[in-house]
Length: 362
Image 1: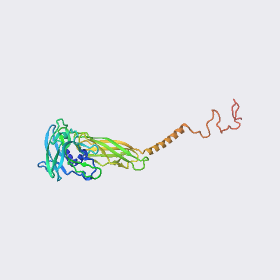
Image 2 (image 1 turned 60 degrees about the vertical axis):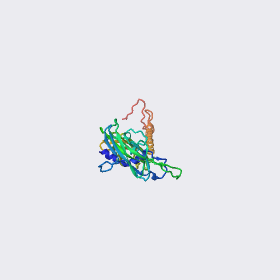
Image 3 (image 1 turned 90 degrees about the horizontal axis):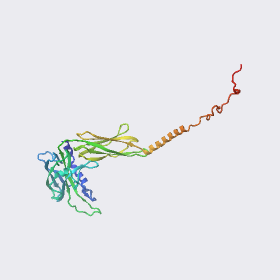
Image 4 (image 1 turned 135 degrees about the vertical axis):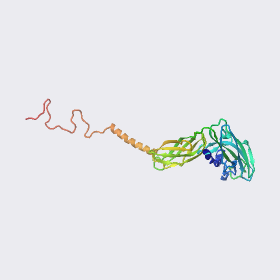
């Protein structure tokens, strides 16, 4: 099945998720080597006749159904190590969407509450260079919703570490690792996703001259009931519809139903000089209609725009003032009605007496 092929890739990455979610580093300050890969492993028990080892657990079950399986814990050191083991729910981190597992003590409502390792939360010792098989059972809740559910089994090395006095700061690092458990509960499947909260923060030189930049973020949400795997691509177009920026595709794996996370794109430099631009986001995953979203923003060199507005305002003001206060016509203002225009004279001998008519004599 597609969902099984997708989730297999995450078995090797679960260690990083455990380190990120269980608070394993306590008051850090020691050598970087302390954060190396644990010298122990937790892997699914081999299946008779299988052509390849399992990297994680995958089950297709109905609500209320029970299945039994086992993990193998191996201590690869030469000394006795102490471990704490528990079952947990899976989720996606809020930034980047990495598949992760809940820490010990977190209220479990999904797969973490369906698994019973029969160990409790005690601490167990395992001699060096030895392995132990840990049997567990998984019972799907009677009211479990159809679709995919994710969780895992975690192992934390809590062996006391001798402190060395090297400076004022001391710390202890507990190393952890886990095996993912994916359960598909029988029923209708509805793969879907949504793109939301697209945001753009620009940094533009006041006069627009120089290199501006922008930071683009957006959120992806699994709105269906299946595990999703695909890619998200963000592009930017200008006012003419031309693509001016294409961000690298973001790979999305083991995206659990109900999960939501923020994608932070690399800083975009050399943005356009001015004008509106639109961010387009498209997330695709096999078996579902692509999820899309877009947001328009302005690239705005505020000081340059202010200067342009002031200049235009001055021009408009001058035109308005000229219309309200027209200049005097050349030659002066017109006189009273019937009066001769200054600067003109009547021809000599052309003044007639009142009531007389002027004509030409014979």
